[in-house]
Image (spheres, rainbow, N blue to C red):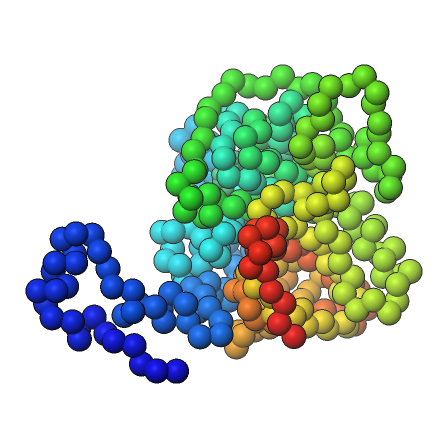
Length: 345
Ligand code: GTQ
């Protein structure tokens, strides 16, 4: 590959003339914006230990009342992007949110899509567009773009969940904004029960237009049971994984980020192939070693790590007699829709 001309090779008066007219020569920057064969991600392999993060989150509970925070969140920021950017990867935002008993995080809606993965505690709920979704450890709750959502807590212990948003992408698009709203009236609950039978959908004849997001809560008990059934009935399947989908369309549950649950059999090790999207790994249950590039992360329950795209990730269950369960989020739907998705074996 031949060397391209540098900016310094150009006469100063020429560079100044270009600059004054808002013009830039491509060739000095061409290799940087499109490096040979594969990108150079800013996203670094990073892990966040729940044990070390939790006391700081609880301290935020003492330092900042919910009225002063609206959402009391510590953002899991990737230093490769600069902490102030609040990005785990180019498209993924991660935050640990704390709600204390009796607290209320008021209703709003925004353009970025969000999901919650419940980490700890009982008695909290999110109301999404009038549907009350109880928060139970391991549940996945969607708050898709534009839908009203608010969080409440009737229990007695702190509740913590992991927020996953496509905020960095929507912000980059200059399309991120929010609107505050009044407290919602609860009109329904349990979309997950209406839609819990695989291959069979409710078919109302006289109902009007269905929501683009028919299922808002994916209970962990059902996801875990699906994984255990898959592991038992498909013993030769190397990767025991489910994708959270929209049950009406079979497509990813949200448009931009993909969400999955993965089970490692006792003692199992799997290497997920290099794919273009970045991904995050959050341990719901068990003990797992994650190997990303030159980094080794010993994940315990509620720990989270991230991996850039274009790199394989090895996951190993450290227990020889118990399964391990992970929640994954990645940028696959975005890459697939844009036609840039790749797998490299
Ligand atoms: O709970 O609505 O972590 O609006 C960031 C922005 C959570 C939320 C975040 C949000 C929320």
